[in-house]
Amino acid sequence: EVRLVESGGGLVQPGRSLRLSCVVSGFSFGENAMHWVRQVPGKGLEWVAGISWNGGTMVYADSVKGRFTISRDNARNSLYLEMNSLRAEDTALYYCASEARYSYVLDQWGQGAQVTVS
Amino acid sequence: EIVLSQSPAALSLSPGERATLSCRASQSISTFLAWHQQKPGQAPRLLIYDASNRPTDIPARFSGNGSGTDFTLTINSLEPEDFAVYYCHHRSNWRYIFGQGTKLEIK
Image (tube, rainbow over all chains, first blue to last red; front, top):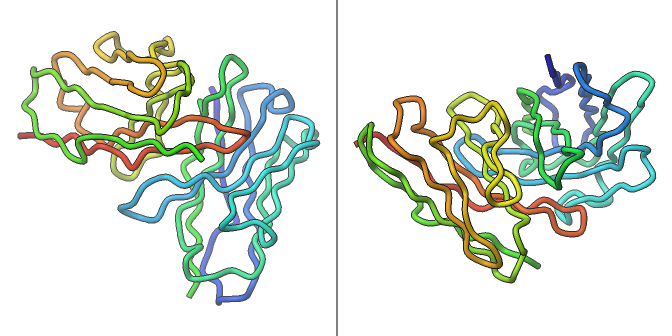
């Protein structure tokens, strides 16, 4: 069974930092690109950041560039999102998602970690 | 930058009816378009990829069509569990772009 489990969310003051983790099981984590996508309750989906299978490529949305850092540890089947200089507008549910190897599509999603900046 | 526009924003139908949802890209994206379903309190679920391909665990009543700039998701004979929000998405230069969603409501 494929599982993606996020952790590390919480309530944080503006300007502070938070680190999200996503532990993956049930597929070959080290072979898949991974992404973070966020969603404000009641609103749509917003892609945040992505990282290649080996960590060699990292890409960010303009809204978080320079503040957020995506990373991975393939030995631990884990994906991370280091969030610095947090703003109220970063408040959202953060999902980790895997990119399929058969197409450019997000095929598996975690249940999300809530981040509230206030 | 590619923009995905979904229509309608909301659609009210009854169980057993057919739903047709639209996603339009601001420029041609070939068939690189996927659809997700999201129910309240749940993560998105992949329904269709490459415009018309269905993962093995997705029921056959879901179908996708289109290429270039115009795409449709059709749900035949709506089941009660199909009432949800549907998003189209596309990957462009490593970045994922989402449509704003269509809410499918029970009439």
